[in-house]
Length: 99
Image 1 (spheres, rainbow, N blue to C red):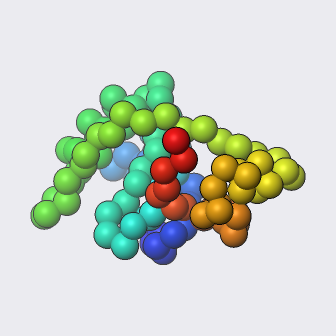
Image 2 (spheres, rainbow, N blue to C red):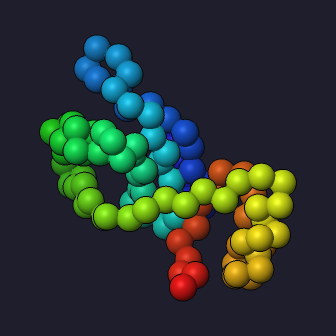
């Protein structure tokens, strides 16, 4: 379970429990889930996820890019661009507009 404002590293498993791919699942909003799959496998991953959906669940594919700013000075670098980022910690997930 992913709490609002957080994200988790996870695995996409097939029906037999085999690993199909790894992914990041984040919850930048109260409702919904933001899933980041590997670009090289995205078509297969999204096809599998769509086939497994049930009830009112739906998958909306957003063509986005992921830029990871990492390292001991990452927080300072990002805080220089947005005050909203200054208090973010490890595995925090937030929707903001930078540019």
